[in-house]
Length: 315
Image (cartoon, rainbow, N blue to C red):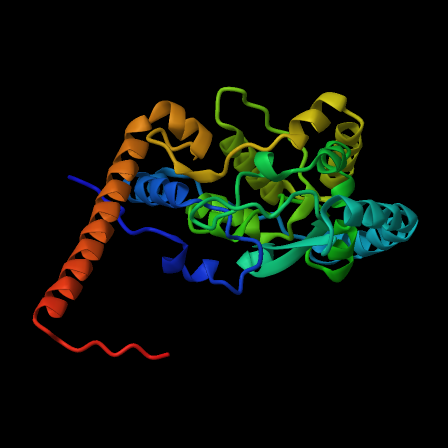
């Protein structure tokens, strides 16, 4: 059976309306591949994935939020002088505005705006889509990312109740359409500043490992779990190797491969170049249609002049 995904794009996705801030990130090529993978593999992944049972209790329902608020408020006050310095440096680096806002997936799938110090330019490609982060981040931005200084404003999101100190990382809204039902369960809790890895499997993709680790957290939340993960988070902050890896940007999650693993655009380029070839053929086909339509319009105009039709030009 032939599967096609012609004319895919952000305009067809209600969740990616122009009102959603900072989500014009997925290229037409990525949209096409995400559509293709969704049609080929998503139903099968949903049928074969294990169900998720969220951990509940007094800590999860009440105490966790109270501790988040108290700790985040204290941290926000302590780092305020640092934030002021970073704000000034950011202004001289990328200009105004100094704050980057992006709509992310929040608790129960409810969108919220995450705020950070800007560390990238707004350069776009020929289609008006933002260039990959690696091509837009500034030198000062790389410094901010390496030491996670651009994340300090996230304490405000924790204070507001949009985020937690520990929890699955908040990801762009367009990911929600690509998740399996199992991985959508990472959204039943507040997103966190970080969810340090407990499950480690180097044989599966980065995104699949991240999502499965998030699901583990949803099923094992508790006071002792959070204490352990906070200690791991502190180690991560002072781990030079980890900071360097975090400062570099990979490609976006586009769906699930034939083995049921969450995969990225970068991996698809290596394993399934035929998907990209199909996309390029569609683009060439659409371009030919536009060229033919333009030629027909010119021919019609010349024909009408030959028939002596009057053309009134308003001035």
